[in-house]
Length: 205
Image 1 (cartoon, one colour):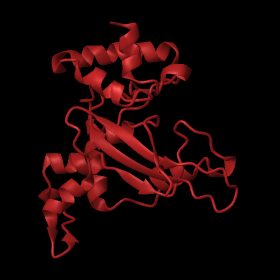
Image 2 (spheres, rainbow, N blue to C red; image 1 turned 90 degrees about the vertical axis):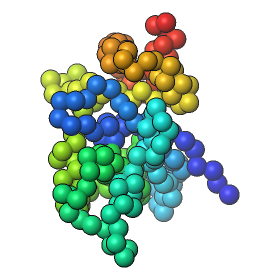
Image 3 (cartoon, one colour; image 1 turned 180 degrees about the vertical axis):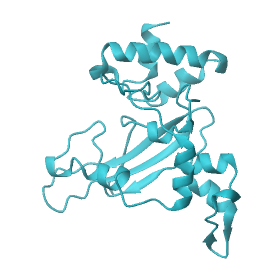
Image 4 (cartoon, one colour; image 1 turned 90 degrees about the horizontal axis):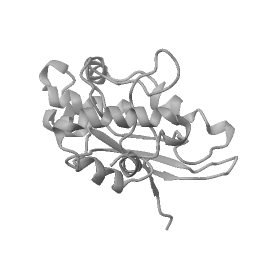
């Protein structure tokens, strides 16, 4: 039996969508279960993304919404029948596909764009998810270009330590603390982008 390894070091901005202009800090974290493979042919690497609310530990999933709108095994596809929380769950849902993201590991060149093609630039979403992602939008990742945003994963290489460090911060202080964290990451983005919130707190107590 092969064990899938947990990886926290891929961006989760597409799973932290908010209403336009309301992003303050990430509420969700991505736990990616990965299986690496260096085979040039018949590569059996796999990618599974679970999304959890950092504060509550609850799964964020479109199926939380669909389960409430299923009749005789069929899902109601009318966005007007879904609540704000339902649309939030659909917009920020988990992902399962055969694309292989880089994360914290290296890929053979021929597999570098498989995740993008299957998970981001994939065939059209159903109209229901289109409605959800039109309403709930993602913050752009930090970077050096003029259209870069202010998104950085709270949970990174530190995993559970990052979760605990973040949850110690009172809710009223989180927006300010997150701004400080983003500034700190930007100082050495190439080394700190996925290092996690716990390392920031160790240097900025």
